[in-house]
Length: 130
Image 1: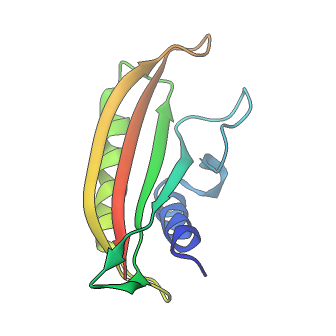
Image 2 (image 1 turned 90 degrees about the vertical axis):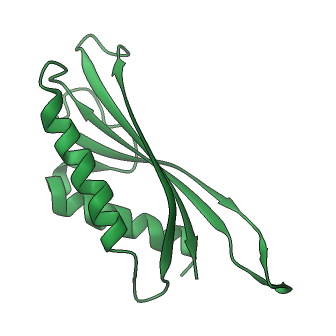
């Protein structure tokens, strides 16, 4: 199993534990999806060498989006985002890899891409598998 797929699966498991399987997507869901939902977005793999040129330990970047249709009730989305970040920090070990969370960047913004006013949380995770 590659570290990218393993970490994606870890993020998915954490998201499912928080809000249920039906509200977690690996793509932007169609109109009519129930809110709030979590979308596991883009992932980046950056190769690097560690201690010598024959061992490669990549840096992984995973972006996670949380959407809510109650922008005036910001607290519920903030709660989901905060619990997701805490759970990722604690669940930093799988059967395949250990993960060192280097950085988590979290921001919120209004999303006006639909006719429904949305609030979007964006969580960027930088992680080193070993």
